[in-house]
Image (cartoon, rainbow, N blue to C red):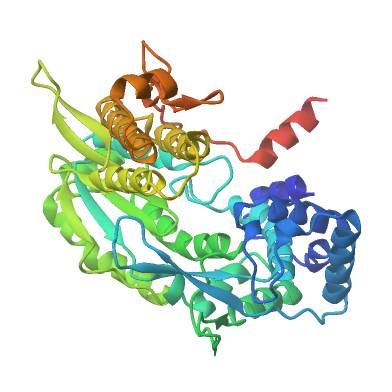
Length: 464
């Protein structure tokens, strides 16, 4: 059914869909939605109902929840509960916190079913320049696109930051853009009810939500993408100059080319032109964001040349002279902020009192190291991996010496290290992850050749 919705939306860009509400409460959609909710990492966190989705394991419990949700949606008696507020530290920003809104178990189930219905429709409209929270797309695609355009004379960068995007996004702007595709008033009313559900603060006070869509909600990334696609549409239209000859004429007469690369609420605009062209984007971007209820952060938004470099999605992107030549090349490195973040995690995990055994320590440390290296292996990261490995090894060795007071280095090597080559800390078959063994490879830019998951289903069906 998702494939059909996507096909209809692709073939008819002006179509408004009616009678989608019946799909949201369909048992098959709810069953798939529950699989996503219960398998999500956030399933271990309760909402205001104090129900932990991961703890609902019995078949009878799941069936009862699905049936109850289906009946409430059919009868139009379903009302979302306020999201539970949880303040979490911002990565790399000591003393600053990000507010999450954790929905109740039933709210998460209905939001997941809503996304299953809406996502195939709006994916037909989304531009190829956005990558965050979209199927089959990832942060590395955005970095690869910046790398590709940086080598094509797009040397000025408008590095933008939206102030409190998820908190200030206008509800009317979201609903207006949803209405372009959705004509079912029941679906629109359901979306509005989630937006207006409110949030319960950590102090236990219910607060209304006049704007914003809480981070932590399953539908929030999709709703934010629907609203922020106004940015993508604006700059894709701005950069459409027709034929190759017309583009050349535009450039020779002093015009500029623009390319926006967006990952959720983080975006950068590459400019093939002068600094004046990039500076003019301050007002232009502000005018596009204003109807959405959003504004640029003046302290974090800036215009920078690619030779100076800038940070985006954890990478530091900079054009430098290639060693041994006079040729300038765009390089992508793990940013200092990202390195400080992983170093802080390693330091916290190797706290003396946190683990009883080396095995317990390695079981928590290894996934952190492995995940960080997997993310940054598509960059100039080998030297950073060397530094991280040496730092983690020293921290684990120091932890062992504190846990076993008076132990000599000779005995530590004999009891807890694997021996040469490597001398990796190990216990009961669990060996510390070796970041030096991670292969660093170039991530190839896929341009506009990223298929949606539903197109592959349709192609496979047509081939039968």
